[in-house]
Image (tube, rainbow, N blue to C red; front, side, top):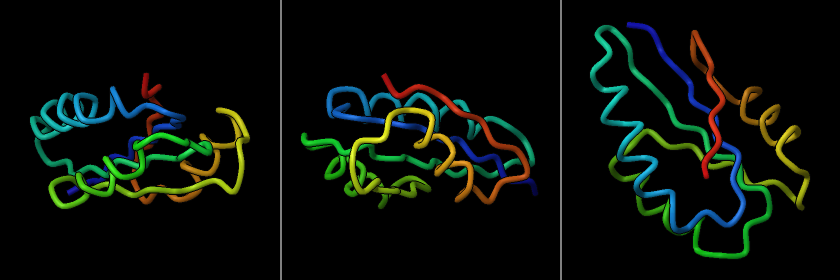
Length: 95
């Protein structure tokens, strides 16, 4: 079985994360012979985004990476790719 890593950079996306994870997970579960991991890189959010992800870890293969300050999308994508374990990695916007 192969592993697909999906990397998301986010900042203050509390209104989008639950639906995003639901849709992505439903789609990826349909891929035969693939497992997946969802890597969320927190670009210094100050809303409830991290709490939402922490709650959803119980039901989905989620990893959270918290940046030490606001870096922007590029460094967050690179951090996510560095921590990915998949045979293939994809970056997607979280908004």
